[in-house]
Length: 434
Image 1: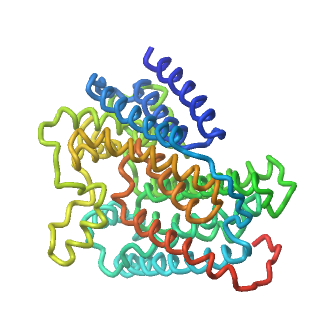
Image 2 (image 1 turned 60 degrees about the horizontal axis):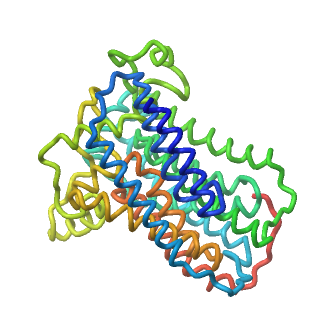
């Protein structure tokens, strides 16, 4: 019964989003699709999860309602602009290519340094693989000496521009693959997977949002791009990132033998993509929120999760105490520690946070959508893409607590302001596919 209600609500909200935004891919669909997937997977109960309380449903519903209200308010107040802007993102597409190469190269420096540190610590690739769990623990405790913090954020910045560049070309190119490989190699060194999910989301969002604008403005460089070619490009990205995540899972030796798992789920042990741990990763977060809401000690310092990077910077000057990078875990009944962005909003701002932040997020997303449609500039694309990344990962966590997200957003934002100045410099506009 719960699944039927979720599917019905999902269908209605997808149609509502199409009516409001005019496109199927929009901030509302980006919000509701992963949340619906998580709730359906949780209710399927392939792992014997605890039953969700009415309070959990109320909190999740209130946040969704507030998000929709924020969207509708800007929709109602918006007055369409009569101005027609011919300049779309860049005049010279090669500028995007150079930006991708520069940023991905900076990120590659971090990757090389990180792997060099690991080889120095463990002597060989087999030694690194054998000690993968130890590396994971040391990384969480910030005890791996010699690595360069946050520099890989430039790789994620390059991923954003790779999405835009791919939209111009109508398909993924060799240049676009460069930053994606950076991210995969970095996450394998980190023995982590969340960064791969973030890169995947940033790439897809920038690709599709830029593609919508370019198509409407008649600015696509290649007029006849088949649907098959576009699908093949997206599949290529998925294969690269899923392969990286699978490598991380295999070397980390992720626990797959969950007690009480259904027979159907148990049969997926050893699978390449779908395994019990992957099912847990995409379904358990609402259960953690459920257990968290039962906890009486729910408050932290003001904004410690939402503005974690700012707290981290201030702590270096002894102005504040540095908050932990990782959340306390709960058993659902299997231990995990991410409880959707709603857990972190409540910790940061109390229960008022589940009303105010989603409302402002919906307003900002709707405003950025209109701004991009009318101005067709890189700055608007940056705002919409990174706001949508917050929305898309909200089922997992508040992504702004990630230093990588913050650094990447800052770098891309500054670059989006500078590119129009550089775009006045005449450069030969090559039709190269690289």
